[in-house]
Length: 182
Image (tube, rainbow, N blue to C red; front, side, top):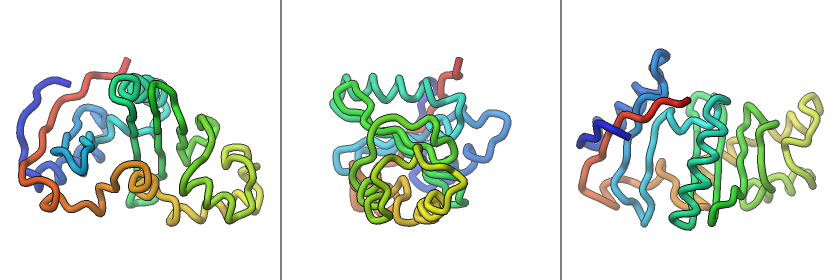
């Protein structure tokens, strides 16, 4: 990351939304929140797993971060039903990668809330193995309100949508230019 600068919390939240809708340079900027419950959140479309051109790069980044820091997690949640995605690594190994729009890119075994929800629907395998045209796949896809990326994040680390910034930090955020994807 380059061109790192301070930004007020409210301005950072607004910038995240602006960057997400920048069609010319959607991967150009990230916003870094102050530490929250021991986690540092880096937010922006640059970390958007639903863009296939990002998947391999972000998987390598997450794997490397987890090798250096023990655990790393990337999440994508869309309020406009554009999909859900998570990438969770521990000690340099990917535990789970799930991208609702691209199930063929999934890695690892479902666990936690994802596994419990699959079990509740009688799905003994993985969602990526379901026939996308089956009734069971349709029922599973309709459950995303119970298994959003933010739900997975809350169970695995923190859910930034329910952790108020004023309860964890009084500082602002940082904004930075992200390196282009090659």
